Amino acid sequence: MNTLGIAVIGTGKMGADHVRRIGDTVGGARVVAVADPDGDRVKAVAARLEGAAAFTDPAAAIAAPGVDAVLIASPGPAHEEAILHALERELPVLCEKPLTPDPEGALRVLEAERRVGRRLVQVGFMRRFDAEYERLKELLDGGGIGRPLFLHCRHRNASSPSFFTSDMLISDSVVHEVDAARWLLGQEVTAVTVFSPAPSSAAPEGLRDPRLVLLETSGGALVDVEIFVNCGFGYQVRCEAVGESGSASIGDGHAMVVQSGGRWGGEITQDFTTRFADAYDRQVRRWVAAAARGRVDGPDAWDGYAAAAVSEAGLAAARSGVRTEVRLVERPELYR
Ligand SMILES: NC(=O)c1ccc[n+]([C@@H]2O[C@H](COP(=O)([O-])OP(=O)(O)OC[C@H]3O[C@@H](n4cnc5c(N)ncnc54)[C@H](O)[C@@H]3O)[C@@H](O)[C@H]2O)c1
Ligand SMILES: O[C@H]1[C@H](O)[C@@H](O)[C@H](O)[C@@H](O)[C@H]1O
Image (cartoon, helix red, strand yellow):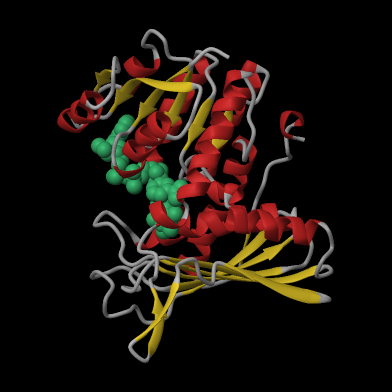
């Protein structure tokens, strides 16, 4: 297999981590172009790479010589434009979540793929590549705990970045549980209710943190998600599935437990780059292998669209305080 030339769009926390991963742990690929409007940042990332060109304009990076595929790690509102540039050139894409912040943008991506005539976009819902999530999926698919009734999910970040808004608790954070629930259950989310208790005193002024999001699914299951992005003590992503004949939980502990000095204890992972390190590696490795064959091997643009539609309903539910139904267009032939 020839080495896949990748353009990485956005070289902040995730983009820089993906650049490192492509160089260190993913075979068969090389970063040949990087883009970020922050000229100093993009130059610093390019300087650590051999033969990669630095751009402040994403479209120029996507059109650069040697680019066979595009990895997008810019903020959500910038994803659509970069994806459309890549699709014009029929290049495979791995786009960080959310595909787009709103369903309208996601529909334009579906339309662009329809014009190309094949699926080229994969969305960075990396939990699907996490070993614990994979085991839970296998258990549920095999009927190991009977028909699923509930997923109880906890999603806690130690702190949120300065640009985080109350909407982003839903569209940027809970969007992971939305995708995980759709994938684990093999069902669509049909309605959303959002509860916003008194904010934590540790939350930045004006941020509605924490929140409780209740998802209803097409198969009659209920998914409750506690989202708490300034919990202060670490990164925790847990999921307990309850079925008609059993229950199973994941995410309860990763680190070593130490017993010493009359006490026992362990560390709490501090952020997603550690907790999901293996999942990100496997996600990018599988994408590279599929992209080299012009295919997608993971959550696709339909999954990104469905998650965006649930986010839209979630944002409306958060504003109104009432249960809000999710509106989905009919699933196009390409994604069946
Ligand atoms: N899968 C995960 O667990 C995970 C974790 C963190 C972030 N993310 C996602 O990754 C993306 C990036 O998040 P981050 O934490 O790295 O943010 P970040 O703020 O650290 O980095 C974003 C970078 O994009 C650049 N940028 C801004 N506008 C741009 C544009 N139009 N084109 C190209 N680059 C642009 C910024 O200058 C910045 O360097 C977001 O979509 C976010 O939701 C995913
Ligand atoms: O963008 C990040 C990322 O997606 C993390 O996986 C999630 O835990 C955070 O809440 C979110 O802000």
